[in-house]
Structure formats: structure tokens, C-alpha cells
Length: 248
Image 1 (cartoon, one colour):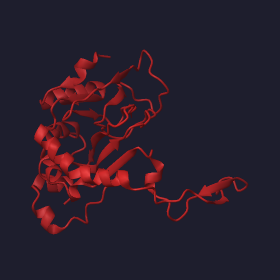
Image 2 (cartoon, one colour):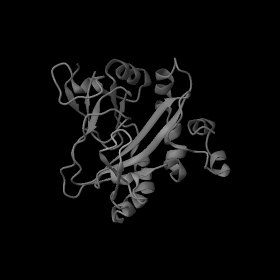
Image 3 (spheres, helix red, strand yellow):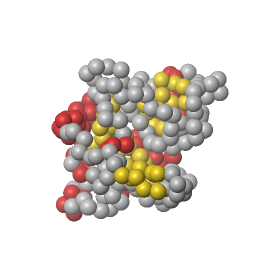
Image 4 (cartoon, one colour):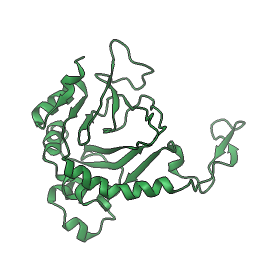
């Protein structure tokens, strides 16, 4: 296991891909420019502010019905107004489908040269690749530390157990130490899909920590986000590479 400094790479695709292959995680310094960060914040900040102001509109489960597996055991059933946001902590907000409204995401981030250089290397054996999911995730004051898990790249100061491929991990050990990845604005942490990681606690009183989350998958798999609804005029304004990323 290397020192954390070895996981940090500049904007060079070969070095980024090698570190990602060797350790399952790599930190890229300055992945987005200050101008790109400012543009993206300008696109998503009003939506995040609106989400903070909204109260929960869904009701908690109020009915019970027999479990299909254990008939004698009552099982909570969600009311019709129960929604997905109730499954995440109230301090955490998500802005989805950036391609719908963010020009910097559509025209700059989806065309990021380094992103595609690394992805071509990573998906060389499986062939083509495309965007599975995108969101800006905000961890507000009081957000608790996540459990160790696998999912997608997390740009919000994740703790990664480098070299770890176990599905569950209660705590680090000598074979699988945890590495605290402190990222500056514009940096990114790229994780293999097999990397166990977790987001760290936000112990501040007023600071909202935001992360751009992207999931890139082989072209043989189905994306989580649906992009068929995008109007033709919007798709035509995108580059052929960006169009391919959204399956058009």
C-alpha cells in the first residue's frame, strides 16, 4: 500500500490509468478548472437552495401488510406519497440529470479530454462506454459518516480502503488501510467499481460540501439515467462525443 501522495496524479492519462489499475483509486489534481467549477456551481446552486427550503412532502409508512416471505410477520408498506428522498439523510441533497440544464456539463465536462483518454484505456477490452449516471450531491452540516460500500466515483472527500475489494468492511486493518482523500476545489477522486469507500462526516455548522458524481459504464450495460427525453435541438447542439455519452 503506497503513501497517499502516490495516489495523486496530474493531468496525464497514462499515469492516471496506471495508478487506477494498481490501486483502484486515483486523485486527479485540477481535473476541473476554477472557471468550470464556478459555472457548475452557478447551474446547481439555485436548485440546491430550493431543495434546502423544501420540507418533506412524503408521509412515513402508515400501513402494514403481511410479509410475502413470512406471512405472520407484519411488514411496513409505504403510503402513496412515500418517495426516494426519504431514504437518504435529510442533510444530503441531490441534483440529478445535469445534462438537462447545465451548459458547462453538456459542452465541457462531457467532452473532457482526460476523462475520455482514461476511459478508452479502462474500457479497452469491453469496447465502448457511456454515461450511466450524473448528479451533484451536497452533504450539509451534520451529515454522518457513511458505512463502507461500493457504488460510483465520489468527489466529496471520500475515505477509500485502497486495494480493497471486499463487499463489506467494518473497519480498516493492516492489509486494507483507510486513506483520507482531502480534495481541493476542482480535484477529483476516480474509483474503480470494486473499491470500498465512504463519504466522511460533515462536522461543520454552516458549510455545505458538494460533489459532482459521474458513473461511466461499458456500452453493453444500461445506464441508470434516461436521456431519451432530451429535445432534438439540445442534442444537435452537443458534440458527437457528448451525444454518444448520452446514448444519442
